Image (cartoon, rainbow, N blue to C red; front, side, top):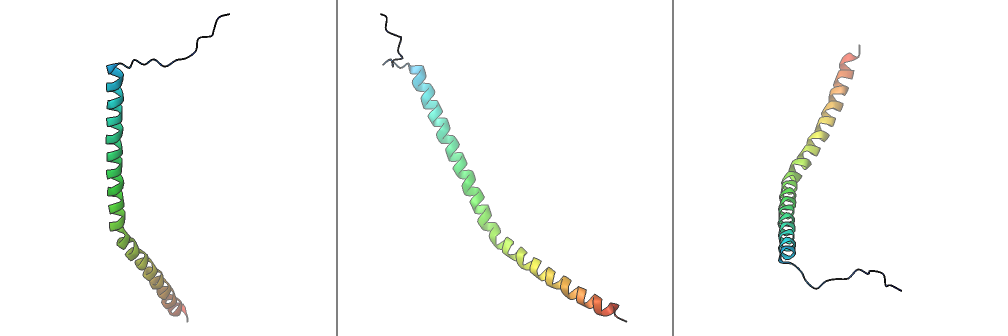
Length: 80
């Protein structure tokens, strides 16, 4: 009876493999750092735009009130 070929882990690791793994790890860390910087930048932009969004909401409310007042004025002018 022959034993089937089993997968086994060899204890030898080449220098090329170690360099490749180190380069991949460095690239992953650089990518993560850039992603973090982009997220921080977007968060700062969002915080800076929050007051603008609040003012815009107030202006929209005022524009709606102005339209309603104008509609009332026009309806009074259209009466005989």
